[in-house]
Structures are given as structure tokens and as C-alpha cells.
Length: 158
Image (cartoon, rainbow, N blue to C red):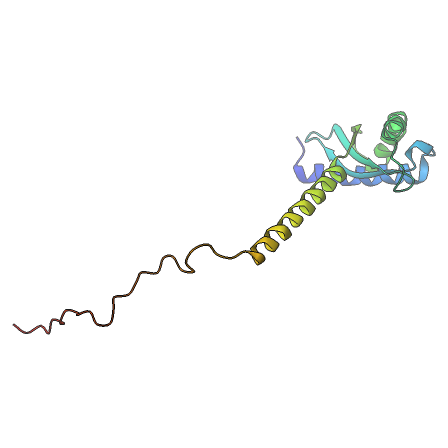
């Protein structure tokens, strides 16, 4: 079993090799908007999972996830050959491509944070306009009247 530091270095190297190959060497138009985000390698260095995202040609156009997955499936053999040549290890890891859900999760988190901010503003507005119910200090005990007799202090003499 390889050490975890070596697996992390290998994952980073695989991520770099695959990203460069997709951007510059593979001419499949389905991969034009694919971005490699991360890679993970098993402890025995035999399997690598490459995470990717797909962007659309513009903000208004939905990305074609199925076409990108098909393009990556077709290019897996070429990419594995490039990884083998670029890493120089005895056994080239198998490559599995997984669509990265981090951008979707980040977008959902941003929406949740925006809703929380709006609710906080509403609560602050309500608190600003609110008046306290009852006495301003309900826990204050009434003081005895000034004319009431107070017990004489014990002087300590007997």
C-alpha cells in the first residue's frame, strides 16, 4: 500500500495531465466546455477518479452533461495513455470520470445564505419597530419607602 502523500501527489499530477490533454490535445467538440476540478487516487494507486464540471457556451445555455460524459468515455483510453506517459509509474491507474456536484452545492448554499440574510433583515426591521410589553424592567424589586423604620445596626456591644 502506498503512502497517502504519494497518492495525493499522483492525483494532482493526473488532474493536471488530464486537464491539459482535454484542453490542448483532444479535439472532441463535446469536451470544449469540460473543466477538470479534482482527482482522487486509491491507496494502491490502481484506480483514479477524475471529477469534472461542464459549462455551457454562455450563461443562458444549459450545459450538455450527457455529451460531455460520452466524450470523456470515448477519450478514456487516450487519456489513460497520456497519464501513463506523464507519470512514469509501473501500473497506469484506471480512470473513472465523475460529474462534480460542488458547483451545484455551492449555488444551493448561496441561495440558502441569501434567504437567511433576507430573514435577518426582516427580524431586524421588526425589532426596530417593536416596543417592549409590560414594565421596562420587570425583574426590578420595589424599594422600601423612605419613612419605613430600618432595624438598628448591631454595634457588637453586649
